[in-house]
Length: 235
Length: 246
Image (cartoon, rainbow over all chains, first blue to last red):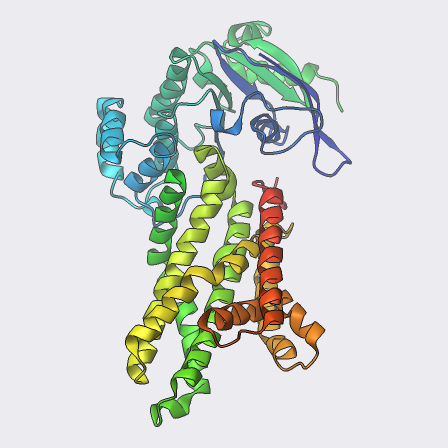
């Protein structure tokens, strides 16, 4: 799915996105990588339609897009179960009890025991990782066409990270299009993914994870990342 | 509406948890009215005097709720990313904003009933009449000003700037009440709707039959239309992304 060329600037002095061409692969995870401040969140804002960019039309209606932000500003007094209710009821009209049962049934055994602990805990009492796991695990249960996750695994422990990555990966089985960003390149090594390297406002690499690391004869994606950057012309 | 109801529940939980904001809207106007009418503890007021004071009291509550509870709160939500996150959860910004509006309306109504009940008992006023007046006013009067308060949320300002501006705005609104109240100039009286407090006062007086002047009716109608149009335009222009943070 070709999204066209995307231009975006906050202050009309410096282009954050400069004819960035993003082609989404509906059968693989689309992983956007790049340095901090390279414009990944801006790119997601534009693709989701939160920021209007000249000449660019979001690929889907807002009702078809689930966009999970990097920082989730949540009311600290809300309990885990309240948050799950808010998320699940945003898509469906069935009674919450039946939505809850279906949701719980979709979780793994370890996830269920975690949910049991978090459901009556206020968000203000949860760790950042627990909140992130709960939100992402729940939004994956919604039914949208395009899912955008801005650094979904930041601050998660290895077990939570695995649960979250698997839940996001499972969206592909439901024929959903997934776009996400990450700085932890190892976590997508075993998933079908298409990497999009965003640098100086442009997508300078699009291709598979394996092809990306193989270019530099290494198994370590961080080394490949550094070497790739070193090859890029300075702005 | 189902989605708006979910946000209504969320905001209510937040409001119950943050009792200070709730009490602030009730206590500040109550203290002002009691201080201004301390003599009522000795001699109970007549119904028209009581009604006039209650309308003034409700006016303060509505203005405080519109500026703080809706305008500045939504601006804070926009800047913190809450509005963006929940818009993409529900697929539209309408439920997130409308949920806030009806939640504030609900709490204002509760506050208005609590205050009028208390005042009617303390100052020996007809209970049923007081409650009917309160119900009628709570149901209709706040809506145009609530809609217009979306203008605050649409301003390209950061919360640190808007909070003191909100306080200045509240002072300004109440200071300018008398400019319109005491004027003999018919044209100035017509444009009294430009001050939200005057619009609320006039609406309330019109609904309770205290004023039935045709020109005042036209002023109120114009005010209601202007406020709703401003609210609609502000809603359309209200960005879900922060104006100050990337």
